Length: 105
Image (cartoon, rainbow, N blue to C red):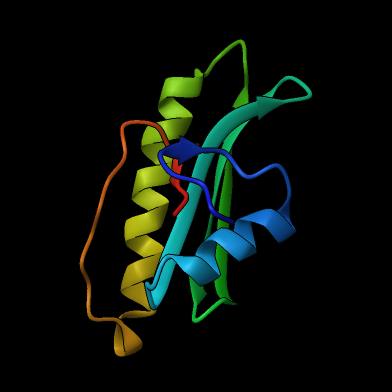
């Protein structure tokens, strides 16, 4: 892609292109957010550019839950998904301050 510094891919295709250029075997994306009055989180794990697993959980209404709860839930789901796929993982974990931040190189 020829980009440097943080960026947010604008589509799934762009995200897959970024993934292919990162020289990482395994990448896990997570997000906690709200939609249609509901709060939840989802994670997806890719190995060599191929989707290997997805987890998601709805916490409930935005009147009872916050985006911050969903972000923490997302991290918990990342750990759970990695644990279920541990048979093919050798882990080097890099965390970013915001789950929407992606390093594009």
